[in-house]
Length: 169
Image (cartoon, rainbow, N blue to C red; front, top):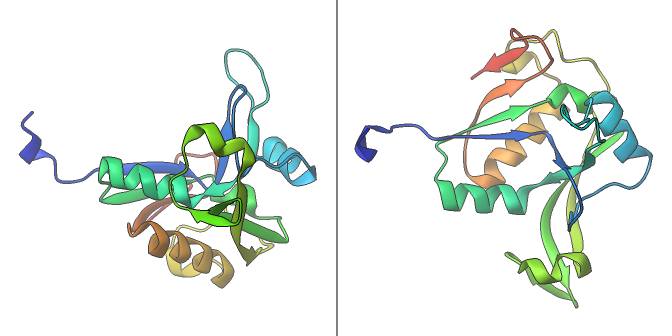
């Protein structure tokens, strides 16, 4: 397949972050919110049964993935997992020794402070919605912020476990 034949590159991300195993995870939630994401999102390794570490979506890393891979579109999955949160955060920058860092080296990840954009939760079930404009306004604001930050349209939105639980824009 010649490279010029590829017209679309789809980046895929959950509406929150997960990690398996040890190592740095700047947005990890070691509180009831992390537990809630793990339980609602069923974040358990299929093979090992190990619980995945959960945290807020890291837009700094998502934008870096876009720069490296050149997404033309984003698929945002598991958005419904956030339905019951009072507030939802996304990482927008990192601080190290009082200085903003856009692309920190791995060696300093454990020392970074994360800056967040905070959203009010939509507090309603979205799994039955199939049209973007029918999503709650707070939910759309969350999606549009991601689009503007990463500079890529969110074209597919997963709102549930069923195959049909998908909004296509």
